[in-house]
Length: 194
Image (cartoon, rainbow, N blue to C red; front, side, top):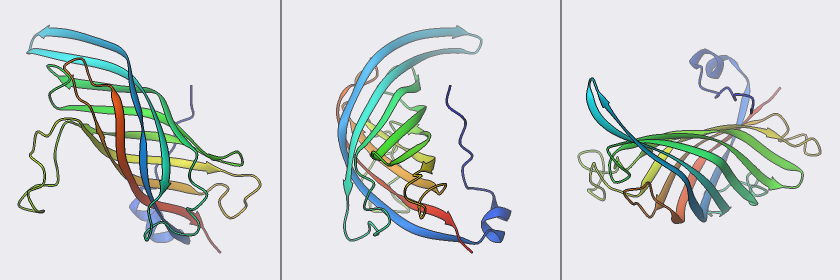
């Protein structure tokens, strides 16, 4: 079982810790494979829930002009072997998901962490944004990923943390969805400095 990664999200630590940030901006393409789809019903309160387990495999590529020099090595593969989602009713309704990822950027740089967020919802809508999504858009995963970078041969990155937002589009289905995935990862690499 992977070690739980502590996200760099404590207000006091952010304020007090001397840190340097580098922007990471990636486009992603890959595949979502459905391994388990289990519905169940409760009587009190009455509800129907679908729980799924997927494998998610992505190939990140740089997105200029935002991707920084420090983020350039972060290509490779991004894999979540066990992405678990709970849906209201079925895979065409709102849900939430979580899974532990391994981002093998290069043979010498790896990020281990957790992604978690919402499924089948749209946040890019009025009144905050142009109405490009509805509140119940299907085939969308969005959330946050946090990870720790292991790069023994790259001292500037070794021990740094990654915090990012992700937005992925996939092919939805009542069973939970499967098939091609496209998306974006936007965030920062957080390193201690002196």
